[in-house]
Amino acid sequence: MAETADRVDLGGSLRALRRRADLSQRELADLAGVPQATLARIESGRSGDVRFRTMERLVRAAGGRVAIGTPAAEAGDDTGDHAGDGSRAQASDHTGDLTGPEVVPVPRVPHDGLRDEAGRRYPAHLDAWAVHGPRDWPGAWWAGWWKLPPQHWPRRLPAATYELSRERRDHRRWAERIRREVAVRRVTDDGLPDTCWRFVAELPDGRLLGELRAHERNPRLLYGDLIDAGEREVVLDGVLVAGPCRLLGIGRRLVEALTVEMERAGIRVAHAVADHGGVDLLLACGYRIEGRGHYAMRLDRAPQPCAGPATA
Image (cartoon, rainbow, N blue to C red; front, side, top):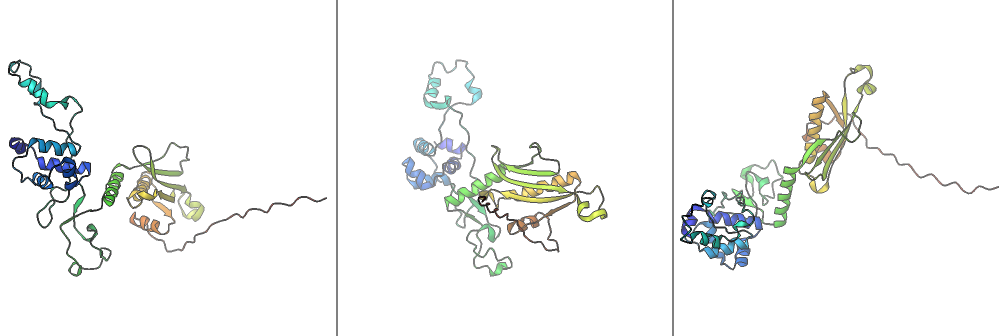
C-alpha cells in the first residue's frame, strides 16, 4: 500500500475518523485489534508501508468505509477494451459497497497543526487551542488577577493546551454550536402594539433560548413641555436567557438587536433598571449608570378575609 500512502494522508484520515468517533488511540487500537504502536506510527507518518488489511480494520473500527474504484470519467468509458481480460469484473469484486451511500470525506482535525514542546500532536479526539494569555489555559489559576505582570506569573504559559475532560469538551462544542446556530429577530406578527418591542433568540428548529421585551414611552409625560413633541424613548423591560445558555453572548445579541432597531426608528434614548449580572450586561452594551438612585419595590396584595355567616 506504499503507492496509496504517497497519495493519501492516511495518518490525517485516521485522526479525523478518530475525532468523529470520539476514540483515543488506545480505544481505536483495541477495537480494531491492532497494536497501539502500529496506529501511532501510521498517524505520525513514520510507517512507510501500511498493510491494506490493517488500514481496513482501523477505518471500519472508527466507523469509516474503504472504497476502491476508478475515476468517474473512466467508469463511464464502456469501449470494451477490458471486456476480455476480466479486469472490470475484478474491480466490481473489490468495490463491493461502492453502489451504497456516497462516501463523504471526514473533516480534518482542526488543531492538527499544533504541537507540544516535544513536537508531538495533541490528541485528535479532544479539543486543543493556542494559548495567548492566562485565560486561555485552564492551568492558570491566577487568570483572574488582571494586574499581575507576566514576569510574576507563577508558571510559564504553554504554546497550546487541550481539554482532557470529555464532559467539558462536549460542553464547549455544544456552546460553540449554540453560538453558531442561534438567530435573533424582532417579533412583529403576534398582535403586539407598535409601541411594544419583543425580540427572540431561537434555534433553527424554533426552540426559544432568549427573549427581550421593551416598550416606548412619551417623554412629555415625564418632562413636560421641555421635550419636543416628536421625541421618543424606549424602556427596556427585561432580558431573559435560558439557564444553560447564559454566558454565551445571547443576552448581548438581544440588546444589540434592540439598539439597531432604535437607530432605524430614530430613537436615541433607552432606559433600564438592572441588578447583579444585568448591570454588567448593559454596561458591556454601552449603557451607563445614572447618578440618581433607584429603589426596588414590589406590591403584595394580601388575601381579603372571608366574611362570616350572616346572623339574624
